[in-house]
Image 1 (cartoon, helix red, strand yellow):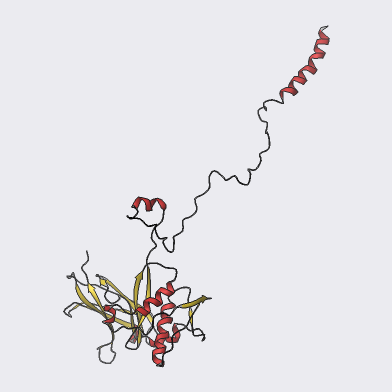
Image 2 (image 1 turned 135 degrees about the vertical axis):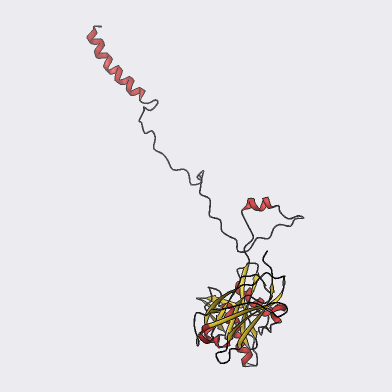
Length: 300
């Protein structure tokens, strides 16, 4: 075969070789086969950790002869829920006065509040004259649109009936989910319907029997002359160890909040009394006094 014939034959052979070679390993820059979606049962190998939520009530642990070790609790990422502090409104000399309770957290805070309200005051609270007129067994049957519904047992005395209603209304409306209370299918009521049952000076802190330190912050509400609220602290012997005064956020004829800070020199731990009062505009004497028994404690 001549050289020209060899050249003419070589071109088809070279083209066929290149085409056959393309069926093998893809060349550089070839996109290859199109990706396919994983089957529905396939799960991604990595996913973001879910945000942990705080349990409202702890799950009871399984029976065991010994408590779980701290390392075990830490590895599960769980912890006991924080306790809840609720405000209770008791009766003292025919008027409403507040105190507080700290209990384990629960989703049924309204039930907890009414149960504690019916249980009555602590010994320290009872010593100040606090009592309750709410019987046991009263429960909220429904909370919807900011209204709590319940029924109260009948009572013959209208004044006692109204105090019972006031205790329930002022206690339940501390919760954000309750703005009003419907009692026995009547029209809903709120705190303003029983505001006349508050004394001129209300002390929300400290509470009876509380162990307090200096400086002490005394809080509450008042409707007093020129909005001036006075405070003094007495030791176990009745000696005055601290005094102070503050101004409520509203003057005479309206109720406003107050906050007074008082301090005293170091004392041994002993019983004491915090008195919150109004100074009479007529003769300068102490009037509308609210006395709160406490324990004066030295600062560690």
